[in-house]
Length: 320
Image (cartoon, rainbow, N blue to C red):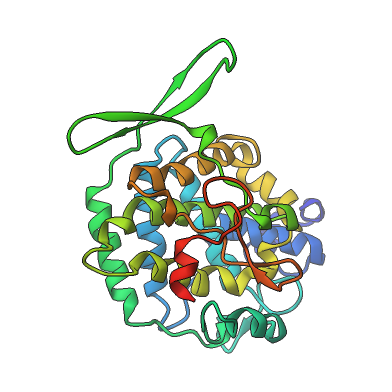
């Protein structure tokens, strides 16, 4: 933003409001800054329901994982929303197309992913709201009313000076403790890609809510967990997959997100709450990997550590 210092104050304000008249690299940082603040990003007609989904996920996450400041999930969702409304012109940002912001679709990559044996997802450039979303949204609304913080406490011993334990309380009032470091699972994608930090953190926020909420509705709405996983990936993450799999914006995101970024509270508690949410709901087998293809895009992402190592988990199996 240094080039703004050499302009008059009204001119600099106009530049920051429109992100116009500045260098491309600065323009990208300017647009990300605007997105972080929630400025100038509105859904195109017919897509307003997506805001309800993000709002519910944000609200539930803040309740079940209050160990990160409330502003964290808000900031991450704003950045994701800004990316989704991005332009197709290389920077992935800012250019309106027919009055709304659109993202360029890579049809070659999409042919591999969406026409795979895993799931027929359709074209990301022409997404419509599937009827099943109504059941997902209703379940999220119910979960939002019932959500409570997951219980963690710090412990100490001679070998591990400070570690965090999840305490799961069962219906019969008994409880069991889980050391959260033992819950972490690695995916093949963790080794293949250097992720955009904000989009990947949105994945963790989403997965936390999936794990905490959806297994409880499986009896009344079969496969709701798998459908939520697939449909959220389709509408909110797959259109951004090329940005998601690149750390290009991370230097800017580090500045915009401050202490949330990297090894700070956002990173640590984002992982803790995601892995713990599946324990909290009573079945770790509902934990899915990121819905991405690995090994030169020849196979579905899979776990490399943990109880599901070598598999993609039950949700992906349900979609085959």
